[in-house]
Each structure stands twice: as C-alpha cells, then as structure tokens.
Length: 458
Image (cartoon, rainbow, N blue to C red):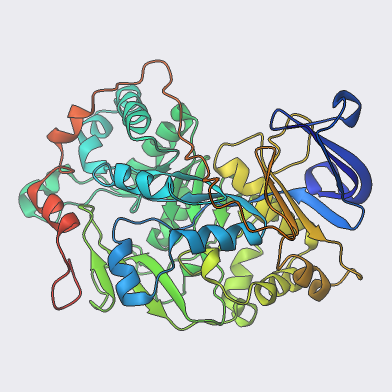
C-alpha cells in the first residue's frame, strides 16, 4: 500500500529534524520521497501530529518459558496485553534478551503470538560448551558454531549472563576462564558475527570495566549499586571508573516508583527469595516483585549515567519490560526532565536499533523501514506536555501498514514478525558441539521443565 503523510511534523535527531513540517511517503514498506510515491492509496492528514520513527525496546523480558508460572505468582500480563501496551506507546519492535538453546524455540513460539509489534530473541552463549575452543583461541570455529545455532533456532544477537567461566566442582576447575581471557575472546566473537554481545551490567566487577571490548552492550545500568554489586579480587566495589565507555552501548534500566517485576541473575550470597529458575548456566535466574523508586532521586545512578555518551544509551526500565509501567506519562516526563527530548528519541529509536543491528530502523531517512509512531502535537514545548502527548500513540504504522489508529480497534490479527539472523558463510549448522559441554545435561533438562518446589526454586 502507498501512503502519504501530509504536512507531518518530523522529529529525528539523526537528521536534526525538530518538528519541521514535511510530507512523508510510504511504498513497499519503506519511506520514500513524496515525489516518487505516485498516486497514493491513502492520504493521512498529519498536520496536528508529531511523527517519529517507531521505538524499540532492546531488553524486554516478555516471553520467558516460565511465563505461565510467573502469571500465577506475579500477575505477569498476557502477550496480548504486552503487545497492546507497547503499540499504544509507539513501539514497533521488542527484543527478548535471553534464551538458552534448550528453550529458544519455545520462546520463539511465544513471540510469534505477540500482536502488533515485531520481536526478536537473543541466544545465550553457553561458555562451557565453548570452553575447548576459547581455551585454544579457536575463535573462527566458535563463531561458526554460534552462527549456525542462531540460524537454526531463529535468534538474533548474543547474550552472556556472566563474563567468566567458573565450574563449581573442584574436578573441573582447571577449565576455569577468567574475565581477562573471556572478554577479549567473546568480543572477537561478536565482531566476527556482526552482532552485539549483551552482558548484565550487575555481573561486572570493578576490574572488568577496563576489559570491555567494542561491540559489548551492557544490560540495565540501574542494577548496579555501590556496596551491593560484585567485588573484584582487591575487594573494591563495582563502579564505572574507566576510559573504555566510548566503545560500548548500554541500556538504562531505570527504576520507577511503581512496584516492579524484575528478572535478575542470582549471586551466591543472595537469599533464595523470589522464584528461582535454573537454566543450566553458572547462575540462576530470579524473578521477584520489588518495590519501586524514582530514579531521579538516586544520585549514584545519575552520576554513573553522566559518564556515558547519551548517544550510546537506550531506554529500558528496572521492570522486566517497559509495558509493565502503568504511569507511562509520568515515567516519560521524568526522563524528559532528566535528559532532553532529542536524547529521549535517541534512547528509544537510534541507539536500540544500532544495538539490535537494524540499520534501517530508528530514523526517518529515505529507504528506512516504514515503522512510524505518530503522536498528538503538544500545545507547548515542556516535559509534561510531551509526556502527555506520547502517553498514547495516535497512529502506529508497522512495515508500511497501519496497525493502530483512532476510532478503530487495534489490528490484533496482525502479529509481528520474529526477526532472526541469516546464516552467513561458514556457519556450522550442526549443533552437536553442545553435547560435548553441559547445555544438554540431565539436571538442566529436569530443572527447566519441572515445577518449582515448595521453597520457590525449580
């Protein structure tokens, strides 16, 4: 369908567009100059609308295999509710950051039911399966195995829940690899695969920050707390005093004052509160309800954020996903009072598109994918007015099709596409290398598929 948006007020920091009024053409699911559009099938009057690229969430825990149990315990919303909320806020893509090979297909099947928005899921890197290759610097072989596995399972991007390989049993400890060995090697893996490698920021020790290679994406900066994070061998608390931050991207993980459902990786010293899931990785995943706080009053967090280039930050919440925030207008206003409107659009558009390796999204250049969010143009240029305007998307266009507009129910039948990486040359499509590691161990199979015990663990 050919669509003409007439007299739209365009906002795109990548092109220094700050409300300039222009026509915008859509053809074949792409943005095109109006002069090349020909006769449009539909004309949308956008004179009263602020038009941006649609937003993306790079760390949205929306479809874990344990979702059924989470709904019983924490009132985790349905996929229909999550998709509707994201669409109403102007999002066209959400990224589930984590799936082990054993659960990736189940997670992908859930994402295929997510309405209105596109999605993707990252493959958790099983370091113990890669240990022989990493220990011998066989990076090309490891990259081929991961590329083949990602293509087979339909995943996009890589996830590392802990940047070191530590075996708990003494008999295997000779195979341990510290962050000084692992981080440079997995950085090279990410470079060869052309994919960002995500690491939870809370998993890093003070000395790890100086080892972070280019291409790393840090998940949820807000999860780091002085005195509560991991400690390095010298006993120092986790911090971000490093000169290496210009080579990485990160998402914010901002706490908000509503109670939040949070997914985090359990440390050995943690209590066993919450619902604990063993995915067969060195650390267990903990789901818990947490009382919220307003990030604006957390001086330590805001001091840490100022050390990062705003162009390398993406907007996420401390909650499992942004759709769980009920007071969306209040949250956006708080962000706009802390950062600028341009930075907000970068946080929600350009940076997450770069993190997810989707160069045709997050901007309004000609040829970009026609994912557009149109909001009522606010009467005044203030954080409150903009937050109110962006609390409810007026019109949402995904892949050149209108999926949300006034006076019509959301197009729930239009489920989004689950995006995956294409298998490149040299990808090893045979996943048998996993059997040499621990991914398919019996306790992992039982732990993933069993009901949690009386104490909350699985």
